[in-house]
Image 1 (cartoon, rainbow, N blue to C red):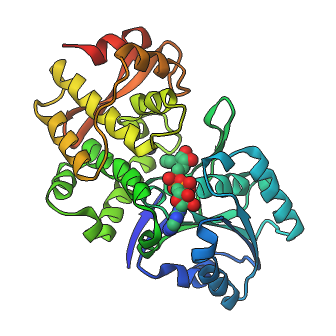
Image 2: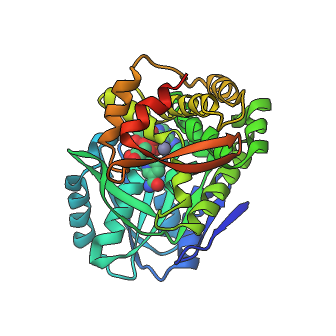
Length: 350
Ligand SMILES: NC(=O)c1ccc[n+]([C@@H]2O[C@H](COP(=O)([O-])OP(=O)(O)OC[C@H]3O[C@@H](n4cnc5c(N)ncnc54)[C@H](O)[C@@H]3O)[C@@H](O)[C@H]2O)c1
Ligand SMILES: [Zn+2]
């Protein structure tokens, strides 16, 4: 068992252990006075893991109602959350009860948002089952949904009472989602941990998945604890994301996954950093090689002008300027404000 303690405003622990889903009930019992729970999961995850969690909660004496939504990002909207509110009300969930989020990032974000808002906030526990959710989205307390105008535009900060990570669930995760999650895993090495980056170069991450998850959540925990509300350091987690989001947007959010777009964004920024003499020479090649090792793309064919234009509409851009995350070298990152008008010139620099 590995435990990572998170000391945000409301402290909680992240537990990593194979087979942990079978112990959900014990953990809930030790952390909460809940008599009832709503188990939120999606149509792919429900048939695989719902019963493990249901049986464990029931054995601990908790009355469970299951809420299953259609899997996929397309479900991540207020209508689905509204359906959850109905289930919560019908199940007579009170302030001492809880929501159990079993699934990938979509499930965690939405169930977390329902928990943040139902009765002005009830407890929830994260049981992340995708690699992305295990290394990234289940930690940090950001919850929310998409609007037709953009991703994650409505949300709340709401910390779970615990995160239970069962790496065995990755055995059923389709390969393309493993690849997707590896984009974020590589990002952690780039921004904070050169030794971890080397480890990913020399070993097969999947052979050491518990170490990998523990390292990633520890890095995210450190960054988030120092900047719970995303005012400064937390921006480092957006390395590769400004251009990544632009690429996703240019693809109309289909045909390229988030992790793939982030991989391209990371390589592009490292290249730009090298050209400007900010980033150590050779970093971009190493990042590209590592992305390729884990089946991630590193280039695409949009022009710098198209990318800069798409980046303008990113909600994270503060007015006329944008906070770009750059590397001094692998493992050492910082943010630099850059005017949006200069972004194209910056990434295109020869
Ligand atoms: N809150 C945050 O800080 C944060 C950070 C990063 C990403 N996100 C959000 O996370 C979401 C992406 O997360 P995701 O990639 O996990 O998406 P997802 O929840 O849609 O899961 C990906 C796919 O894998 C399936 N799946 C999940 N676990 C499985 C398993 N063990 N076996 C088989 N299939 C499984 C799902 O049903 C889905 O089809 C986005 O909405 C993004 O905005 C949030
Ligand atoms: Zn990301």
